[in-house]
Image (cartoon, rainbow, N blue to C red; front, side):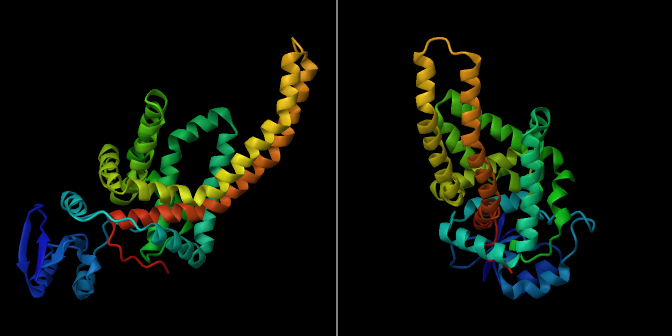
Amino acid sequence: MYKVIGGDSKEYGPVSADELRSWIAQGRLNAQSWVRPEGATNWQPLAAFPEFADVLRAREQPALPTGTGLPAPPGNLAAWQAGILARHAELRIGYCLSSSWKLLVANFGLIAGTTAMYWLIQTICQRLPVLGMIYWIFDAVFYGGLCIVYLKRIRGQSAVFADMFSGFGGSFVHLLLAGVVSLLISLVATFCCLILPGLYLIVAWSLAVPLVADKRLEFWSAMEFSRKIVTRVWFEMAAVLLIPFLPLLLLMGFFYSKMISAIWPAMMQIANGGNPDVSQLTQLILHTAAIALPYWLGAKFLLLVILPFAIGAKMFAYEDLFGSRSAPIS
């Protein structure tokens, strides 16, 4: 026997498996409808129950025209959100990290290629002042498309290189706003309210862009829904976001200590010598650049290596919190 959340967001049941199959065949339920076996505590989408796979396949219809590169959104957003809120929030750090590695190994060409393209566009634009500001506004649009590539492969669906540009489709405006608004508010909170409020919001809103790209929520609803769910597992989510970047953080820490120890004597000499001349300042700047350049290049290369693993871990965290928790990765 099962209980189900209907299209009107009300709970029905208990009903038998045959009755559920009948409702699916009639179109009253779909793969995203939330179901709970009698005696269980967690709500799950119908797609997570293999006993209904045959009738779901028979009813399956493409939600969007072929070529959009976008997965189908929940048939009833209100019911889907109610089901997510009703179930126990669980985020498995080790599972997210290990599954991300398996995903990368199994799909290296596609995952590494699309992520390298994202990294390349970001790196080039950041070196050009005006273009860098424009790209900063559009970054979430590119990132949303990249999330779609990862999520499709996590779910065992086919994905192509062009999917990384799917953010420029119907969710373009909300992806842009989700990225810009969440970052601006987080920065304001960080600088005006010390570090902790901004850090909380950065982690709490970290899944807002995937929610817009995957479920087509409008930007503020995605930010709030991400905050509500991630807050329940905030420390686990922070660990998933931080652990992949530990090598980069160690490199940057070593770089800053090396640079300070190398240029500090010259800085003190200039400061104690009164008004420095142009040649002294020029020499200090060139010396600093000579030290910084190899570390900067190393950091950018290391970021390129880390990004596929880091984004994969984040997308598995997204599936852990908002998906069926039974996604294939091959």
